[in-house]
Amino acid sequence: MKNYTPTKKVITLTLTFCIIFSMLAVNTVFASESGFVAEALTLQPGSTARDINFNWYSDTDAGSISVVKIAKSSDMRNGNFPADQTITVFGSSGVAVAGKLCHKAGVTGLEPNTAYVYCVSNDGGAFSKLYTFKTGGTDNFQFIAVGDPQLTRGNQDANSLNQVTTTREGWANTLGIISKAFPDASFLAGTGDQVDTSNDELQYTYYFEPAYMSSLPVAPAVGNHEGTAGNFGWHFNVPNETPGDYFGNYWYTYNNALFVVLNTAPYPYSNADLALYIPTMDATLKAATEANPDVTWIFVQHHKSTSSPASHQTDADVLVWTPAFEALMDKYNVNFVLAGHDHVYSRSYNIYEHKVVEDIDYSANSVSNPQGTLYFTLTTASGLKYYDFLTNAPGNPTWVNSIDGLHYDGTNPITFNGKPWYTNIGIQIKAPQFTVINVTADRVTFETYRVDTMTPIDTYTVIKPVFVTATPEASVKQLSGNKNELTITVTELYSDGATNTFTQTFDVNNNTADTYTVGSYSVYVNTKGNTQVRTCYIV
Image 1 (tube, rainbow, N blue to C red):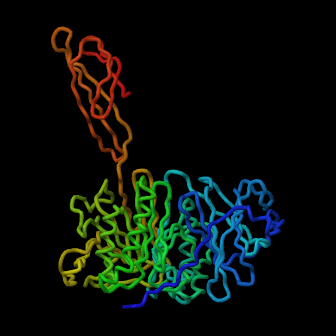
Image 2 (cartoon, rainbow, N blue to C red):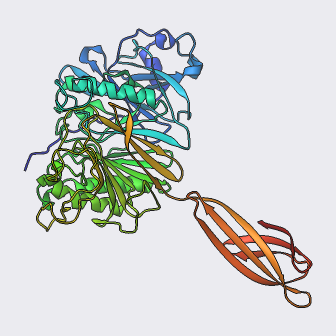
Image 3 (cartoon, rainbow, N blue to C red):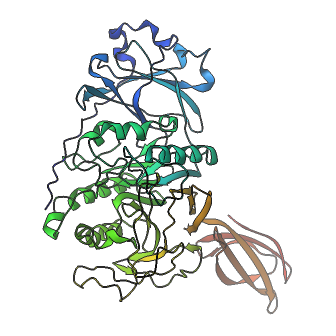
């Protein structure tokens, strides 16, 4: 078995506000900036949509006092921070790669739908140039999911349809397209392999190099190419991380959605090996779901796809990961899993208890209130390399609607002539891609784009119907004398267009006004004569 002994991540200290600010004698905190460019500067989501975490590098001789100051863009005065409208937070610093410190800080309680300006300092005196970001609103939101940028020092796949040549250029090109085409995106969700070599700082430099990376929060997963090196922990400041040497398991929320990030980078080759990892994943999911019981949607981000149609699915470690990982998804009622590793795009059937959920029309491009979990595999966002399907079909077809094969259940031998893999749609287009995900109160829509043509290759919507309104109706039927039969129907309307009705009849006198129970509703009806209804409404 491969060794997996990750370096313990630098512990982020509890942040404080200006109570120690006077100790620093930094009278220039609200003055013009000195303008240095913060090294490897990045934003991560905080615990909620109103929180942001910061992370950057500095030379060890540049100071070890981590400071961020932030203000609304609308409050800035000639490029300076107004003293009465500026938040100043102090973070922590720690030793990173040789000659470097990593700085971590965070701010909470930001206003929604607001543009902010910020800068950072390594010593509390000299501040960086100004950077910007914008918080999202409080209801519907959009985010971008990317797979395997896997930045290298060299070229992308020779067969890539992308116009640029290096992975560095490919990544910058993808982010440039995203920033222009989807300016309202709230954050970037990664599925691992940000870099190709875990301890190569130049590759991390390429990853953080695009200006977009200092204005859009990114939530990374640990990939196998991040491996065991401490560089991942030095470069990212993730929220709610489960403590321990098995790093990279954390969670965050955004409005009505919970995101749980799990580390499937290790190489277990037996169920006994999983004892090192599954309990931490379980603890992370448990803590996240218990802290956020009212969310509508649960997403999981991780690296090694358990449902891809490409070649990594026969890897020994993936075969071990799959049953235990998917059992956790069932246990915590996870709606969606975003993964990478196989450098191919695929969307699974809905899976529950290691089986395809049968009562779903998988030929449609939407589904309402499905059971089980939907698994996505995302291809490379930089164009590094592309893996072949597990079929014997000639070449790599652009569209593959069914992949023949057998999902490994831990007992059967691997063949490719049995029941289908979990893949509903599998696509190998040799161009970088990204997925735009729109989240509302009652639906999530996934739209995946190829960057060379900016055409969507797959669009799919999952609806979780929510109640919209209830409408009562009443009618009166004449019986005998002054006796009549009152029929009341309450029709519920849901966001997917579905309806639900409750009907109840009552014996009433002429000219009766009263409140009646129909289903769970109290309905007031005022009748007139034998067959008329004056008023009918829910009270």
